[in-house]
Length: 353
Ligand SMILES: NC(=O)c1ccc[n+]([C@@H]2O[C@H](COP(=O)([O-])OP(=O)(O)OC[C@H]3O[C@@H](n4cnc5c(N)ncnc54)[C@H](OP(=O)(O)O)[C@@H]3O)[C@@H](O)[C@H]2O)c1
Image (tube, rainbow, N blue to C red; front, side, top):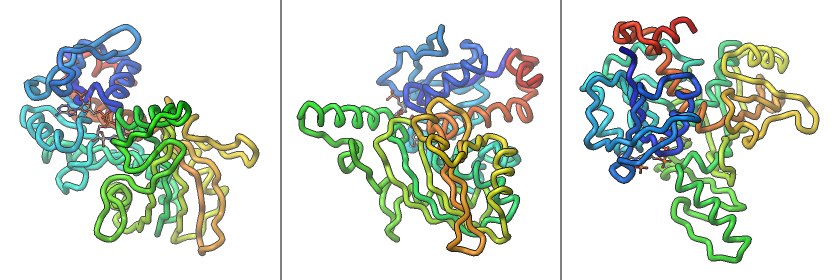
């Protein structure tokens, strides 16, 4: 017997990346079920280089016997089916925004608050944070431990893959259309995304901020520290994969650039690439397909008493979504669900590292 996993939303950007990461980690195809809507039911998705999985219809899928459900079918669908899966004994790790601020659902980034996973028992659901929040808190955590963060001002440069497959198609088609003089069609984004930047992600809130900006503030407080103030401006840019963030941090205590760089270098999940020369920094295009959160351009901000600026880049589909969820699943299998494994291959492999 082994751990049984279901990837729900398996045909989407995040779901496909989850399947690819599970296959990379050597999880046998027999232990993974691909689930999506009735539109793709009966079709196939790739599982690693050699295998394919048949897609099951979520509406008809029985979660009995599934240990962990890695969900990314959209917020409205998770709202209905994640509790149904949890009721059947499947621990859900949900990528959508639906459960993130539920006080009975832990919101987890393994490098920052792995201990929160223990609270999964309350509802049988663990939430994966927003992609922009994940990469920011991974970089903030070692600095917060060093000098206590008071306030963060961040501007994001978010790739279109963060808005799903159709958004990637829209960037491709508009870019092509402009070169061949075809009319531009807008379906996913409110304005032309090709050769443009759009300061509008998710819906507008009453105070003039967008919901994406609100998510970065409230999620950072839930994961890292309820006292940190965050002011975000979230911008969609014509990049396929990889989010970048210009992050300005104000601390309670003095912190030098050297101390910050050393702490970031020692931090799990962070790669510091910061040479003050041409090519001495990481761009979103270079982060695609990579696991770490890259930190570059670390420098003092002399306009506040204890301030630093930095440039934070990560693959939004990997660390920003699928990888973070799989890391949570790893911890669940290793530390919380061992009794279910019955000495499985997957469980044994994970226990021995
Ligand atoms: N992309 C990111 O960077 C990112 C990061 C963090 C969180 N998220 C969140 O993850 C979710 C999915 O994002 P994505 O980028 O993977 O979107 P996507 O590429 O549009 O894929 C959506 C997936 O959900 C499935 N789906 C849609 N309606 C369904 C239904 N009624 N029942 C079952 N499955 C259904 C689709 O299946 P079909 O192919 O059958 O339609 C597809 O597999 C969203 O809530 C998003 O906010 C995304």
